Image 1 (cartoon, rainbow, N blue to C red):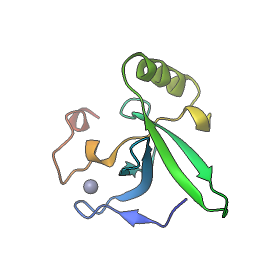
Image 2 (cartoon, helix red, strand yellow):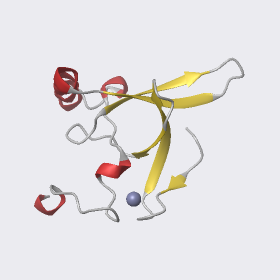
Image 3 (cartoon, helix red, strand yellow):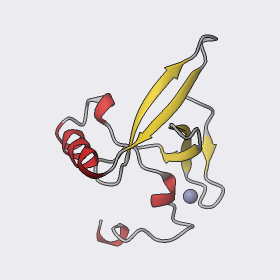
Image 4 (cartoon, rainbow, N blue to C red):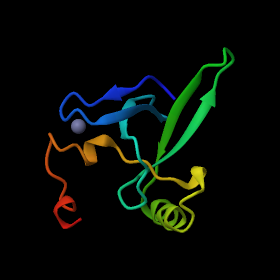
Length: 101
Ligand SMILES: [Zn+2]
């Protein structure tokens, strides 16, 4: 895992990951969520032993299947779905599902 990080807007803890294949850095919520998550996460170790957190975005049918798997096997780390912090950041805009929880 990388160094601890916090969202500058809402002060919520976040984790940085590298989006594959674009290489863009994306902030993630620190807890996976099978309903809101859109990313599969992998840790890649390079030749110097450095671990990088990477994510791949899922969509369409792949995302539907991944959600199903994440709900059924919450203990399976590989199946977890990670949420882009943009989706839940309270400082940006209130999430529509937040009030119904
Ligand atoms: Zn935030």
